[in-house]
Length: 140
Ligand SMILES: [Zn+2]
Image (cartoon, rainbow, N blue to C red; front, side, top):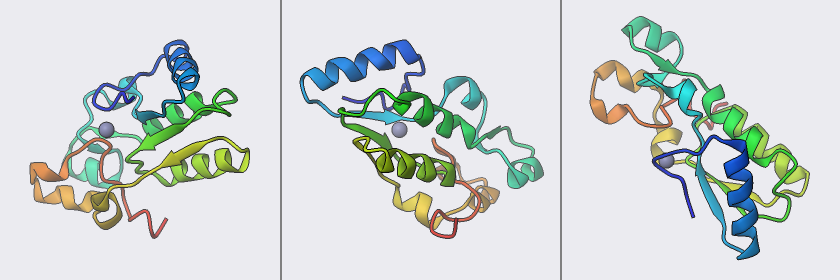
């Protein structure tokens, strides 16, 4: 099951989701963007957003959701982080794996190959959630 499209950022609800999903051995896939940090943002928060005068979405919007969700409570559950976009998220997933947590993740091809510089074109196809980040994930 997944919350993609409408991220759940309520620790109690997510705890229950993970517990019930675990009872039926059903993996949970989460779109990790904390809604109050995303609100109004249209691209990555950073230099390019400032130059363009567009409201940004900070990396921590994604990372805080991963950290809160897996923090010491889903060791036996299957949890997947959908379309990650930050180096901090990769670090969190790596740390969780080292602790034996059953966590997986994936990255989209456009997050590997494009940066927030692509938004300078004002092509609306370059605006997405999570947003394109500065530098590629391969370089970070
Ligand atoms: Zn999503």
